[in-house]
Length: 181
Image (cartoon, rainbow, N blue to C red):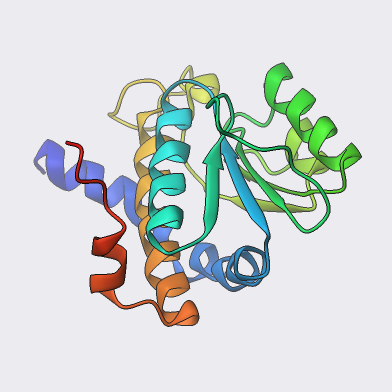
């Protein structure tokens, strides 16, 4: 089996019907949200930024923690977090701030029993090896790459389903893409 085939076979369980069955609850939360703010650390953070970009293209009021233009969150807003290994102190702190402000917290994680997913209003389980679990090395990909790749693919399915739910045409999304590249 080629490396590419092995990677694809490692990703398939993360896109199973059981995993994708979590999308309708996400759609409900995101479609009804005022503001949506995304955050993750390291490469997980890059995937969260990619999601924020697509949410913006869908017409959502989407932001990334740390950007100078990110507004405060409050009632009716959603903070989307990634805590692949189940806990990062900075992610836990942001979840606490958002909850105290009345925002809903949604956590993407590979470890549903982790401290941050337990703090969240909704935990989305993406079953994949993270950097914290790479000592067991079930994936040929280094460190947390399997989780990060799964995040990206799961988010693309989420965006397609949310686009359909919101009735946003592909050309409307395209029109929101920057022209400053």
